[in-house]
Length: 370
Ligand SMILES: Cc1ncc(COP(=O)(O)O)c(C=O)c1O
Image (cartoon, rainbow, N blue to C red; front, side, top):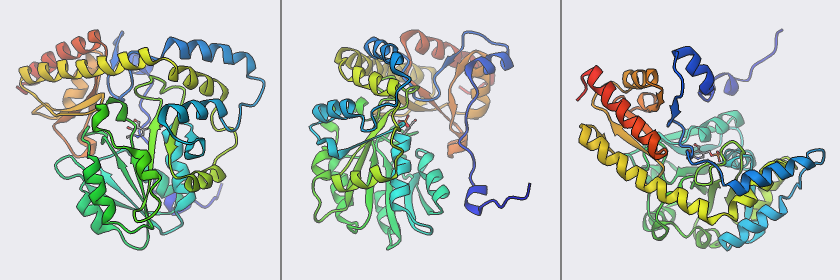
């Protein structure tokens, strides 16, 4: 073999895949472990979604509807958007990829923050674009520094709002000020993967920005079924955007990117408000309960608008992560994100949260952290 590897591909660090739970359990000699590391939804999918997925399986010999008509129609109705303002993806990840494919040429620049969701930078690298990465300031997007970084090569700005991993959020007022300082040639992408967990009155009215096509840059919002809807394994996300941008993204997507069970499951999940609302309420109360406990133990929990939050464990986070892993509790060390004393924990069910607290107390005491 003597193939030539493009430099931009050779330099990509693969997304850390994580091992299957069964494999981790085998390696560490543990059983019955709980995973609070990936900001998933411990309450699972709506039973209506599961039933609809089951029924859809009878039709697997046919290609799915390439326009995802019924799912798009239901989303449009729920959000007050036009069907032509919505683009569905195989997870919101895929919509990030569409945006980069459609707008970034070799050498073009894309701005994102560090730490934030890793995939923005990876897609840009694949495309041969140039990542301009701005550190968070006080765990928030540094909108002033981002504005200063924009130049005539800037195509896209990715801002996860709330931010992963810090859980911080910027308001519509901050967004207004930010947009006014930018050239109209850039596209601002607000990744709202966790927005369902933010109080309704604090959320940004995305459609009002999307439809304002004069005087400010275009705004695109990304949403997902992976978090509040508990369908991470199904892979459905979507973007809300001006219809001209949607039209371009449809040109770069595969015709059947949303598979048949995914269309059926996501559509049914939208009809189960009781399950969705219960998930949001249990997440909020679980987060408050956990933060209170963590504070009492002597660690420092950070505020968050999401289904996860950061904890300063006052010692090396990776050692603590290993110690908790041996007790069957999987959290995320933030060392690789630049916070060596922090872990990130996803809010789980009541029993998972209790198990986390017990393991944390034991590990902290074994390691003499607090
Ligand atoms: C900020 C952010 N955006 C996007 C995603 C990806 O979501 P999806 O499962 O819809 O691809 C994640 C997943 O963790 C995330 O944290």
